[in-house]
Length: 154
Ligand SMILES: [Zn+2]
Image 1 (cartoon, rainbow, N blue to C red):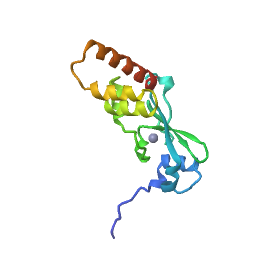
Image 2: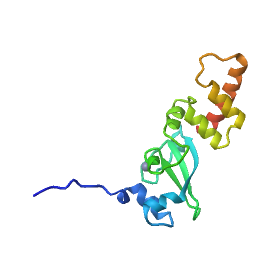
Image 3: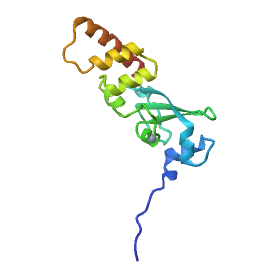
């Protein structure tokens, strides 16, 4: 008698079930394309933490998503975000936010989220890795970083 390895079907995952129930299409492969990235934040206080659509609680690395077909919204934790394929979001965002440290992924997302301007993204990408900045550059850098982190960290 042979034992086939038991496969966990993706459709049976709690996140997939929850999101499909909020979608128009009932097939996950099609349903997930109805969803778009909406916003990101990192919760530092317990009362700001949320529950992922999969049921996992508490989550402090939070992404909200919206269904462009029916307008539904859902909260997704970092635990499940890889199940979607959002362009412009990657988990390095939370690596930086948890340390209150700016990195390239955060800069790119902040521009996409219209927190920083075209000039500011160019400037930030240019200087964020520099060990030495002029006092003027540092002042800009510090102000823009503060603006970004205040937006994403609750
Ligand atoms: Zn989850």
